[in-house]
Structure formats: C-alpha cells, structure tokens
Length: 354
Image 1 (cartoon, rainbow, N blue to C red):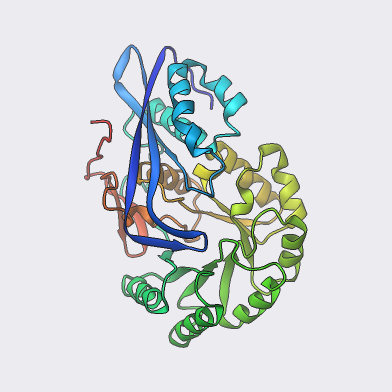
Image 2 (cartoon, helix red, strand yellow):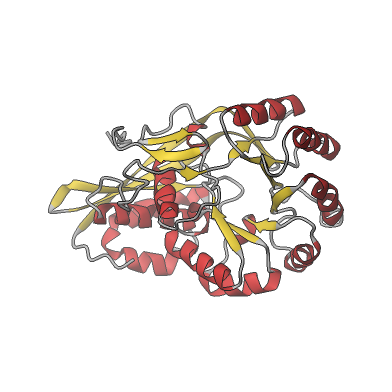
C-alpha cells in the first residue's frame, strides 16, 4: 500500500452477524459470525472516513479470535505506524490486514466505499456468481438447488461431506438427469471432508456426473497426498483452505508442489488484496486458473472483494452470493439479479458506527 497519509485516527466496532437459517458445513453448523469494523480518518478532515471489515470464520481463520480486540485496540492507538504493524503482525492477523487495507483504500477514495470507478460500480454490469447450496438433509439441499435454478442460476456450488456420500451421489445424479453439464455447471466443496485414503475413489465416482471442480477434497496441509490427487484426479481440484496461512514467500513453492487445476481466493482469510494479487500472478504464470469467494463477510467486506474482482475482467462465476445470509447485514447498494451481483448506486450505505 503506497498511501501517504498524515495524522490518522482510527476506531473499531464489534458486530455479530446472525444467520437467517443455520449454515451447515463439514466443520459444523454456523448460527452467527463475528466481525469487527475498523474506521480510519485524517485528523484534519474527519468528514472523510474509510471503513474496512475484519472478518473471521472460527476454526478456519488463523487469526486468534480472542486476541483480535486487543490487537485492534493497539493498532487503532498507533494507526500512524500501520506500515510497521503490517510488517510485524500482519502475517499473524490476515483478517485484520484485510480490514486495514480496505479501510485505507476507502479513505484514499474519500470514504464513499467506491474503490474502482467502472461498469460494476456504475451499476451497468454485474459479476456472474454461483448459487451456493448449504449442507443439510437431502430434502433441504434439494429444495435449495431448485430455488437457485428457479432464480436463474446456471452455476451451482454444493457443499458436501456432512451427509452420507451415497445420498450426495443420489442428489447429484438426480440433478444431472434434469440438467446437462452444458445447462448447469456443478461445483462441489468438500471443505476437506474426504479421508485421504478414499479421496481418489470418491472423485472417480463423482466424475460420472460432469463436475466442474471439487474444492479442497482433503484437509489442508497434506501436501504430498494433495499433489498426487491433483495429478491423478478425473475432476479438476481447487485449493481453498490450503492457501490460508501461507506467507507470500511460499506461494510459488506451494503451487509448484501441488500443481492444482484451480485456486480459490478469499482475501479476508489470506491477508488482503495485495496478497491475493500475488497468488493470481503466481498462478497465472503456471497456467493455474482462479476465482474469488467471499468468506461470510458482511456487505462491507463483500463490497470490497466484489469491486476488486470487477477490475479483473474475469467472466468465470465467482463465489460472491453470501450477502443475503444474515438477518442484520449492513444495508448496501449490493443486489443479486439474474445470477449476478450488481452495485446499485441509487441505494444508500448503512454506517454501522452511527
């Protein structure tokens, strides 16, 4: 970040996001998700304030949730030394780094939460997104799939690993009977649910249904096993959790070791947009494709990620449809229409600090 600010001030606010309905993953069921908002302004121009979101997912983010308030308090007290904080503590707190980077970028653009002036923020073009299907009973997942298809989605992301695998196969088989791969793209997200010994066999069985990709079939950290899977898999594999906690100096090493077909970028979990851009550069140099996914942020974090993606000119559906999950999300110009995320400039932003 090459910002030249003088005499900054900052504060932060805790915010608990409440799910409209329990969100099932292979790591458990989520009922709420904690975020903190950081606000930064120049002492001589307090009317312009940048805002960023510090968003974590328990048991997934490497940020120590207990330490976040203390770390934010220290950062806000010494906000003029933010560059030093990034160097010393940024790697330990990627969620705070994401929030800090976003707030500074917002302040740099006069604090109106418009980071890039383009067709997206002008409301002229949307970002294609996938329809997210949460884990649950077979009936619940089937109802979600039908709802997404009725809403016009042609790319469906199904979280798997929580119910019986045979039931999941049956669900996908029935979907394929109705819709060909040319009509509906199916992405699967295992969240590391497959046992390493059975992962390849499960991928082979799933391959009968024209699957676009499988995210993180086995738990992160099993580099040699994942590398072999990526080499032998009949379905393209996308690394997700595997990227969390990897320092910039090790990005090339990880990609060379595993050589996946895709990587999935969650800026709030990997340390912000500067780090995400490093992943993209390294991946594209190796002919590895990518897409971005929100990580259950409020609309404040989602907006920043969407605008960053909008500058990439990618036509691949992104995982940015999580803004409608909460009963108390921050009101914003973000809207989902015809399976795409849009920014409606006519709609106002809610300020959580008011």
